[in-house]
Image 1 (cartoon, rainbow, N blue to C red):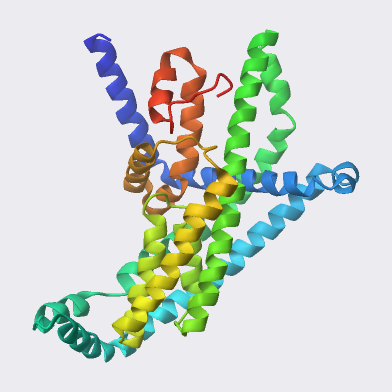
Image 2: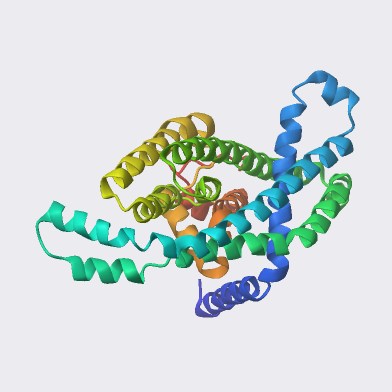
Length: 346
């Protein structure tokens, strides 16, 4: 690669990043709609396992039913969670009396007087610094709701026409078959990821909700939703899903030992799901290197915040599949993959 080509590539990359940052308000609703689209197709594929439903009910009716269910659930949960989160932030001042108890327990446990440092650290801790960004992300989702709905509508309209368009663009049978296989592979990978990840995150959040409710932690629905969202964030998501409600429980009850029990229970739940349930259901079908997943998490998080972290994996999956499709970029796809195994279909 000569210097001029290298400089051109740098300029193109910089321009793409700039477009992603500036065009967030336009691109994010479309990406949100695209993920919902794949989730709907995953639901439709599941219910089509019933031969009667598959043969007798038109696809557009199944799309409408799945869309109404998903958007109604998102709207209801968003309204409930914003209300619960705001109430939690306002009531946090009532937990300040527990700080002295926490400091006393720490001093007795370690046998040293660190009350001043701990007191400053805890007093500087604000639950709003954790909850508000999450609430802002939920509000951002709600703000993108109508635009995403319109995008979704046109995605389904285009669904019946894109096959004809591809056939017209790639008239050669071998090229048409190649592009068709590429699109099928992308759709299968993303649909499989969105569907299974949603199911796994839902199972995890329900179990954590029951555990937090049993321990008497305030706003268990809010924390269960946070667990659900955090499970979509690779690498650090599961850790945050355990630490955040545990820190709040420690402040709420003013008891470190009780908080450690909650930490152990939530940690066990996340460990079992992350190391047993998720690998069993998903396997290594995503084929992403952990290092690349971490880099994608940091990159999209820096550009789009928490929402970028959530969509970092689907975007990286699409990128790897596209890079693997072309001979000149196949080497990059191999480096980004989990074990270097890239099939020709990818």
